[in-house]
Image (cartoon, rainbow, N blue to C red; front, side):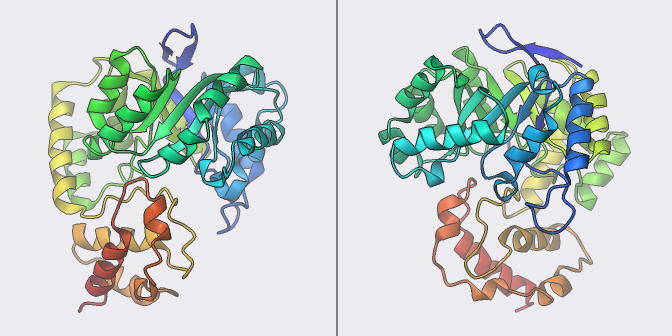
Length: 372
């Protein structure tokens, strides 16, 4: 495993962090986590050098933190830096911040969180949680020992990211970053802005919600011709950047853990060849041309009050656009709740980290996939 200095903390953190957002399940219910498989995966990763585990209060319908807590028993908690996040959507008053942190400590079976983040800040959520005094609260939680490092994660445009970053002396920050949407949200500009000020930057969604691991046919053809593994290329494109402190990968199987560990072994700044850089440039252009809806399948828009599976609808639409001979029309016709049942309540748009105009896109999905 390769390790990187984490700012001025004195910590050396593994280049690969275990993201616990997409744990294996034993049914279609995201809360129905396969605990045995999860424990095996996390412990295998730790035994092979991973020393950073990331989770959050809402993951797996609030079942994620307890599952991680169980996996880190038997001495594994002491071997990792543990990260989780304040669920800002449920904070109605300042006292709620203590309530949730104390609950999370119990759920994770620990007396402190090494890296605690204000979760998923965006332009419309930042003012409210800021005015609740979250920054002052975070510093008090550091002083009483419940958290170690205090940071934030953001799915926000560059300007909003800078506003949040400059408001407080954060210990670290976390942004979405991958080669398919290098200029989306904080992007490369945000990465450099934080790193230039000496603040460690953690990268999430390095595989664009799995999209870069299973590329569409035109992209796969380019990768195959170059003899490159899509996951290896995507992760190493990020590890190549000196500004990145850590890359989180949301792994769902032991096979994925082993694969990512192997890729992390040969990671490093300056490891990307010119051939690989040129290939990424080609792929970036291909994705821009062929994926009209920038959905990462994070699921923050769910559940829809009308029962629409929004990420699935967007996936079908994007696949139908990128691929020829797709079965998207058939699959859409079989949908229990087509996007046409949308009542335009707007709840999904308020939560979308990508700031997608979901209502407008749902209309387009219905029109295109019905063949009208």
